[in-house]
Image 1 (cartoon, one colour):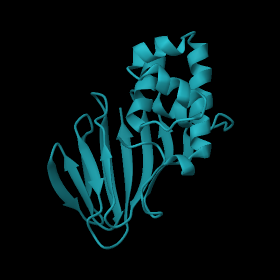
Image 2: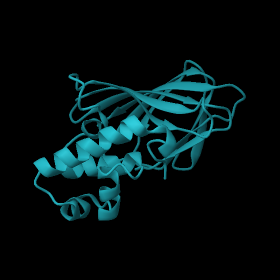
Image 3: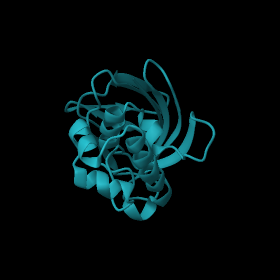
Length: 189
């Protein structure tokens, strides 16, 4: 399971998640137990996230947001920022310092659109969990070659190439090359 960030690298974003989750849960008049039941996320995890003592996967945040009638961005954005669209936060770091994903912005579509900038060092892999039904992704490679695996089928995407696909299936991003991989990712619901 891929967490937002390794815990030593994540104080700001996890603080935002902690604060936003608690504020929105209380506004919805839900106990932690009721939110756990509605989202499928354990009460223990919800308690740990609200107190800032745990990291959480991106897909688990999606489940919590859906249970609260919110978007993913509602839970991760800096609550002190006036703009709902600009996020500009590092959301994931790999084992290498060059490997990271940054959520740049989010805009509503029928539900939501997210714009991400990803970088993976040589040898780095990001295994994603399937999104909820109805979600799609679009990627555009700007450096290196992306190996995209969808439901067990891998395909390489060199600089200047793109793909659009349903993300409600198992998928992963990998850099099997010798140089840094950089790509733009749009998530659409």
